Amino acid sequence: MNATTIKIASALCFLFMAVTVMAGGFPPPIEDPFSQPSSETEGTTSDDTTTGKSPPEEKSNNLAEQEESSDIPINLNDAARIEAGKERFHSTCADFCHGHEPALFIGRPVEPHHAFETIRDGGKGATPMPPWGDVFSEEEIWELVAYLNHLGKAPGQ
View 1: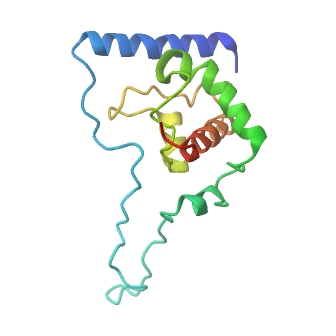
View 2 (view 1 turned 90 degrees about the vertical axis):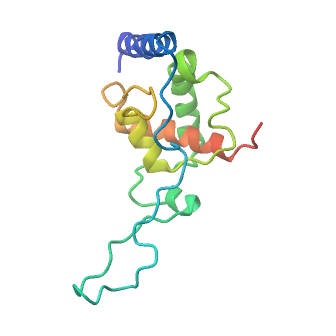
């Protein structure tokens, strides 16, 4: 990752937000980015008698279990990963959008996969968040998620 790319992406984020505010503000969010995904299999039994198939395996709503999930390639509680995510957040995300004391994240647990996808793909119209998947590697995005996860465990302001 090169510093010029980060500066350009950050400047574009700032410009997008400025234009949006001047045009009358942000549209209302479609969904709360911190809400737990709803389970489509609530109320179903362990197997479907009409098709003979078991229902799809659902993700756990327990954030502690998700943090230790085998499909997350890093340990979200690793101090070095959290620090790397913090440094990246403060040199990019904080400077232009979220601020250095991001109340949006402090004391608010994040669902790791949702946070990863939002950073990688952007807000997709629900928020003005630009996609960072072309700027950061997957490992760097997971380190940002580790930092956000750490902030989510901090006492709220």
